[in-house]
Amino acid sequence: MGLLDHRRTWHIRTQAKPGECVAAFSGVFAGGTGAPLLMRAHWKVNSTATGVIAVYEGRGGVGKVGSVLFGRAAEEEASAVGSTISFEAEALASGETACRMWLSSRSTNWGFTSDGRFFRPYMRAVARRITTFDPNAVIELN
Image 1: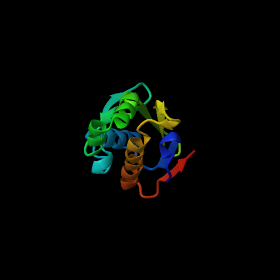
Image 2 (image 1 turned 135 degrees about the vertical axis):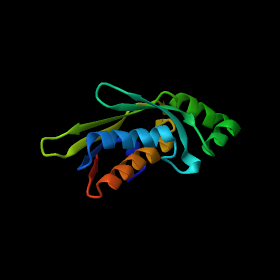
Image 3 (image 1 turned 90 degrees about the vertical axis):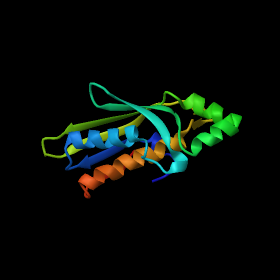
Image 4 (image 1 turned 120 degrees about the vertical axis):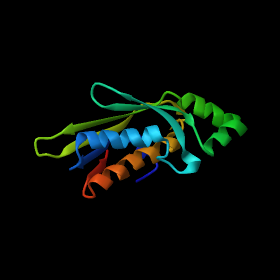
């Protein structure tokens, strides 16, 4: 796992059912506890025709303090609001489920994804939660 994980597409192959995978994604993002206190964020989760999408609504927890105290942090957060992370889960003929998660829209600030450091912990938490259903799940990032 690296610093640019949020810019990659996460492919997860698992024995978990598609509904369990979607519930894992929704639970992490809607619950807001997918990240350590310093990196918490607020998300709105919406169902789509092909899966689920999480819309970034801003920082939460201790991270919000930086936005209040520092103008540059507030500008970065404001530009990131509305960024989206998409998730799809497809049942395969083999009985496995193929999941895909990616940053589907984003803004940049100084060449970097605005508030990307707040996105990564949530994406990692989704992968961890899926491995609780299937410890042998295969996770690839590209």
